[in-house]
Image 1 (tube, one colour):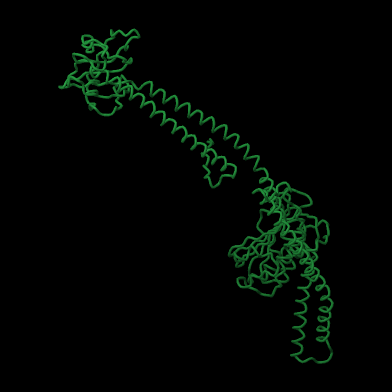
Image 2 (tube, helix red, strand yellow):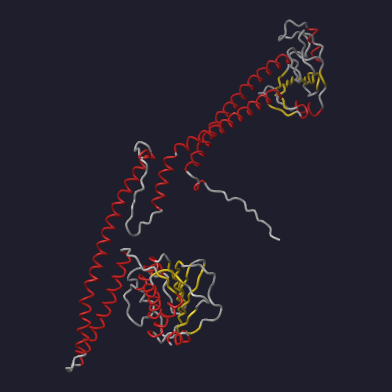
Length: 529
């Protein structure tokens, strides 16, 4: 049973955000801070205003109740007879609100009158409303309020939050007055919700409009980036390059930031284009010089070799010292001729001269090349790894033979005698694959990225039985590339493998033999005979 594993999405840090996302995020953050500042300021000011009004009302109500419970006249209410003022012990003072609380405490802390106002004073001025008795816990909480101090908030349990103040009465006791905070807190809550909702709606609308505006204003930058992307996809490393990509003229206005970038990019592309043209012209001159020089050197080199050979075959006796010198001249002339031929071939490939397009049987090509390598390096152990069916490609048979010959010469030259070299051919997903594997000391890791460059040498780390020009593998790369293929190398100490992939004429489904590779001498006699 297979169980799907759901992995949480990885959070991207702001450093990985796009410019558009960062601008929108900054705008939303600034608007949020602005909304919180405005809303918080308004809420604080409203809180202060409402509480100031409530405290003024509380102070006025407490002042009215301060003289109500005692006997005699009440200086706060001169129009109320003294006998009626005596009734203040059992009725609320004038102007009392519904659900307000008034408590008269004696000097000993006992409750002499008061309670929760049931309905408050009627509109007709009658004082028939009565107090509702308060629980002991509520009275204890009110008794704890210090007299003649500023109003304080007090939680009275089931009655809710109240604004409370205590004043000394004219009778020597304490009058405690409390007004409910329910309406005030409800007003503050509604204002906070309305302000928060308005800020949220503003953020949504501003975010959507800001995203649209930012997206529209960043379109020129996207076009500049698209131009730079197209340029980055061009192959600028070799050959003639047509660098025609430019930022549109509308996006090169130096008065804008994006226009300044676009104009600078166009100037850079002009300089790069001029440099590429100069480089290509210089390369063509060098290639033409190499081709001309190589072609002209072939004749004198052939003459030198001929005269050296003729001198050695002279009927007149030649001193041993002179004979040795002539052999060295002939040997170096052969080496110089091989170098000139390699340079001429590379110059022709660089010039893009067409190759032959004939069917080439890689299986027979491998057998022939390994046969030649066996004759040139009998001290190595050569093996073939061949498929059941022929592997055919379209190309230049002579050049492909040179590819194999160079790879085998490289293995023979840079590995000691007794090394096993396996040459295999097969097919893989529509491509012909050639592999040359040796068990030598390997190629240093720092040299592998440059192994196919011209005059790349690994003499310091690989044993040598003969000299080389340093052009063999570069010719391999050039010929394979001209055939539309690829060549690569993987090397560790004890194993080096070169792999050549070429497009096939057909795509039969077959691969390597499962049998063990056979020594080349088992195949060569049959082919030769």
